[in-house]
Image (cartoon, rainbow, N blue to C red; front, side, top):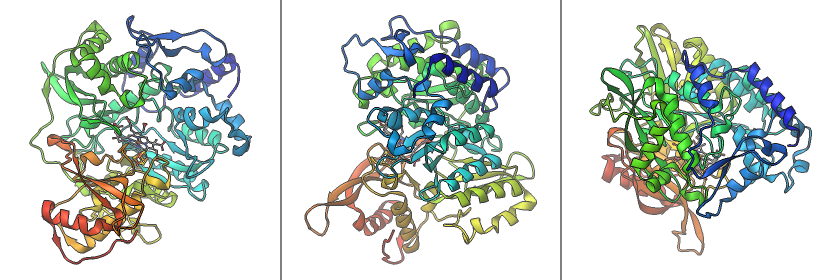
Length: 596
Ligand code: SRM
Ligand code: SF4
């Protein structure tokens, strides 16, 4: 990735003038974003400085750590220091596309291939799919149109063997099997249909999560779609890549709550906007610091702060830049924002954020508008919208795995029966909104929703009580960090349990292949975290197993589950059958067996 600064700047200016924005923002927000993103304010006492020295790529403003404590920077920081990832351009991708991957894959280029490309949503699957990349999008509020879905389906289809898609636990899409040869063309096609992948991995802000039934929910508190769009455009600076916040100490998650159901998982985000009013004005209370990691998991805590809706972006910027300027950049396991909040103390953290807000102050918490007595609604099946005569239809995608053929079909269904829009959910399912009353029955008779004939599996509106909320991370099929296979095993277990037992309630089962817990086992009714465990036959050596988590909850009584046992995968079916009888009121029909 070489090239003079002036060429890079030209390219970036070209991109920016061609694409002033990717997602539609609320009126007036574009000016707010422009003014915030042109601000280079860094707190005087913050442990950072803007590095403008040197030549080559580092001539760009690039945040550096002063390191008064003589902390040892972690290796990711060193990689970012060595070369600022935001300086890669479309031209660089075009050059790379001309070279066979094996030639490109030198020690010198490893920092680009395995790390810096994640700023563009490209994750090299070195171990599982050498030379191929997983591509993560940004889909604010999980919304995708039929036109966009077709483009994603085509890209997945063209990837050939090993090409498939996943709906993620952040209401998003990831596509697999992408080669560097295909990337320049893919980026152009994505831009043309209003999609982007930038700033979706590494030390960046992740997909903004909102209510999956925003805008159609008869009980809605606030429509989260424009807010998630605004936040996303601020984060990516209208598709140009936002350098100011592209070098955070660690990943950072944000959600906006719009429903009483808390579908958005506010308690496990670094920042959650909770709808609240103050003196008759609408705005948000702020929860901060929720996160999961291999060594620590924390629920978000109240910041005792309320912000009016017109200050949503300012708030995000104030919190993010506080994190950027003060967050630890040494031990990678202690860099998430909650560590900073604990280190500074909540009060000092709040003061620093307040300093960075318009007027230099933050109001105290307002009246929460979320009804805590509300029982979470199941979004599967057919539901009346707030718009008369229209319905939203929730459909189950077992463990979130989706093929190109499925995407084409969903695009067709959304267009033929709805308004051409599809929403993704954090449970890795999807919803087709805006289906008129007189089209509902025909939609429900479609093969993809019934027999699954012609497809790998059916995406049902009325799934079984375990499969419906089955969540699974990627697992060892594609993720090098995984200790076990997750998606197929999780699906097989759920199906075997449904075939052998009767249930009186839904049971939310989450699978995750390693302690990073992308599959969020701590919020599940039953969580399965991959591990290696003793061979139950008594033979030497370890076998695939799971740590079982119980006691997790989402919604108003949010709680993090705890590990209660370690079980070999081969022993899982009888173990979970017993658990379901003892703790979840299920009854056994037959013994069954588990084959995945
Ligand atoms: Fe994650 C790293 C997949 C949601 C915590 N996560 C990874 C990587 C990128 C590791 C890698 O390079 O292979 C995984 C890519 C595997 C692949 O090929 O798909 C990966 N994470 C995922 C996804 C796809 C799981 C899924 O099947 O849905 C989710 C993508 C969401 C998105 O669209 O952006 C995903 N990851 C999460 C969540 C859940 C959430 O956001 O609610 C968490 C826990 C919550 C949190 O972050 O606070 C999560 N992922 C991690 C961590 C631990 C972070 C930490 O602070 O230590 C890692 C490892 C890391 O960052 O060092 C990680
Ligand atoms: Fe990979 Fe571990 Fe995340 Fe699963 S939990 S996707 S195995 S990093």
